Image (tube, rainbow, N blue to C red; front, side):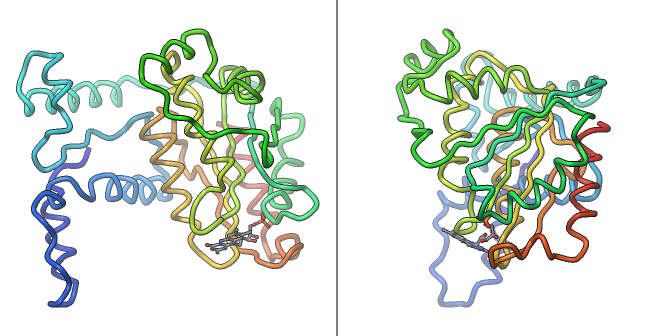
Length: 287
Ligand SMILES: Cc1cc2nc3c(=O)[nH]c(=O)nc-3n(C[C@H](O)[C@H](O)[C@H](O)COP(=O)(O)O)c2cc1C
């Protein structure tokens, strides 16, 4: 739950040099709630906290983001904001994550086993998972997945109600059923320009149609992230924003493993990587 954006933003503006353009009042009112929340969520998660799906009640400075809820509840903006906060508090108090003897683990990637450091790291983790989980791996390589076309809401809802999406393809035929069946989702993420690669971003976007009909509160989210130099935390925050805060996946403690390896094959030689991969695998298998 994050409120008080303006104060956070005013704090940062004081750090800029005097000639930095002043931040317009409108920007102050709406900016920084999501980044601040994702940053806090990642810090909490790395310290061992789990987060329920959609753990953020976001109050932008004017609370105008509660306009629709306020109308639906026939109350004011503050009333709608408080209502959302109390619903979340109830959920946090009452929620216990269901345990499964042999969880179904869906693994999504868009990389090549022959060349990718990310896949080398996953191979180390996967060998420790074999036999303890049912692993379903899907490669979303170039050309197999179209990005969301941003259909009107009613059209997205219409296709979503039929378990599909306007674009169909591998997402509808293979990925949606696999997400429905999964207890845990593992995304294998090379750092491309400090962001998820295009195919994985398309996956997150295309999940919107499935989300119209399904919630993912009882599915765990994991990320395995490899950067050439740095910036893995940016991708971790992207996963938290897109899949935990937005799409309702459960964030188990220490949900992601971040490594640094640049040249082809260098991850395999990275000291301690195999052990960290094994610890990551154990977290998936035991929770
Ligand atoms: C298009 C592209 C963009 C990249 N951007 C970054 C970057 O912004 N920061 C970084 O640390 N590494 C970057 N890298 C390096 C990869 O993160 C690195 O090769 C890492 O090993 C994971 O990629 P891999 O699994 O394909 O081997 C980039 C690589 C490619 C191909």
